[in-house]
Image 1 (cartoon, rainbow, N blue to C red):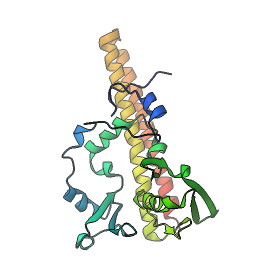
Image 2 (image 1 turned 90 degrees about the vertical axis):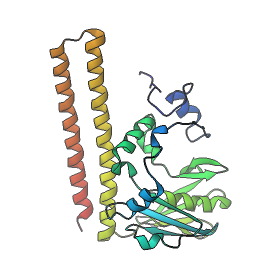
Image 3 (image 1 turned 120 degrees about the vertical axis):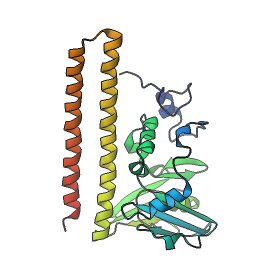
Image 4 (image 1 turned 90 degrees about the horizontal axis):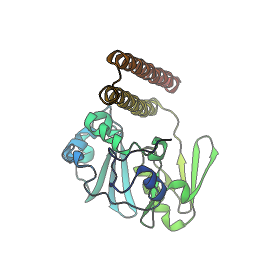
Length: 266
């Protein structure tokens, strides 16, 4: 298997993706100075606030009144929700890259991290971001309930906050000993939210397919210059790549249509 190259990744020159995943990911922090200079100026705070009020966006507003007192407001958000904000507050917009192609391209910088690992709920545990299942026991007592029992009671607030800040979109219940997450019945509004989330996952899959096409075509073009591959052979290869791309983009659309129908069917 060919080792991943760190040339286009958000990593220091001396750390390869293999080293990062082995020694740093979910183990210890790594400071990457000026790692994403492209992100500067892409979004101002007011841009995020306005986007959070878009009816097609999934967003959450967290107002923190004290360490033990906060309130979460779920989309659709309005201008009224942003009035009289406390000193500490945050707004989270899910799948922000869908609304900015430039921002979406920055995900390529982290292409060495598997998607399923990016989606983990991470908890601040003694200053280190740690996967939820490594700080407590997660059980499913019934079809509509998830229970998290912390291995140390003093971090229960950290777990609760991590769930609130995650893309899960469900407010946890904290009784001091364990955290209970009630899966709400699928109301029409909730079904629409789930469709948005599925659409976001599908768009990420499409981006991956498009990136694979780009990389493959670039490799073909380089082979023409470096290895003397005949132009007609290169054109046939590009056509085959495009055909494969179209096949999987179409497959993404088919899967989304089927899942959307499943979610919206009462």
